[in-house]
Image (cartoon, rainbow, N blue to C red; front, side, top):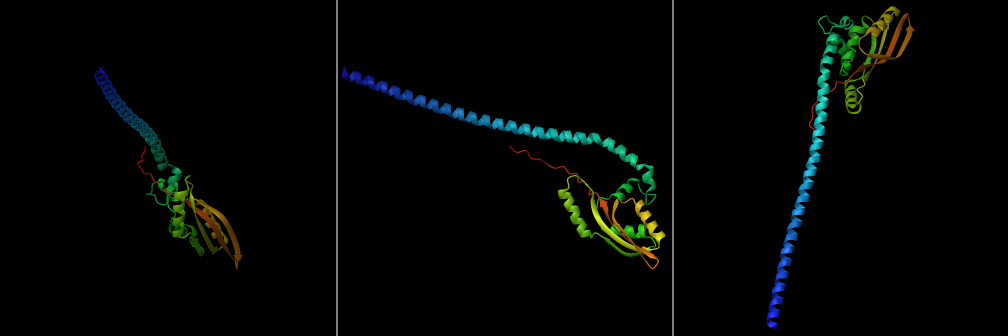
Length: 226
């Protein structure tokens, strides 16, 4: 009788142990499934957020490209109008030049101090005696241009300093100032000094000529990180 009771007790304990083992396995399996599901859900959420950011950037790019494309016809009409502008045609150096060339000559895209000095010699001074001409050296002008590209986000024109001193009779100096005033090159006179000696006048002029650095259009890739 006692033996039957012991046998029954052992069987119950074995069943309880087995049930506990099965329960532990189910709980462990459920925990693994929940953890994997949480990781997958987090990855899906991150991917969804990343896709939304990428789509937003793409929409911005498409909007900018569309706006640029829409502005092309208007710009073409303005260029055609400038190409036939009578006032610009009258200011051409050569009859074969396009009217738009006048605009480029008035506000070039590069400093080119050597060309500015040569232009003064050939078109401004004429038969007047030139005592001195000074223009910003090319090396210094290049530095100014590079600084403008890195620091100037407004697109303002940059300046090149120049100074010249000429000697001649008053009518010739007056004619020089008239030619300087009519010059298509964008310039600003900073100072003007007139001295008279021995029946001749010496004119010293200091000023600035301007140029507008060219804009660089470049397409680039933008990476959207997670």
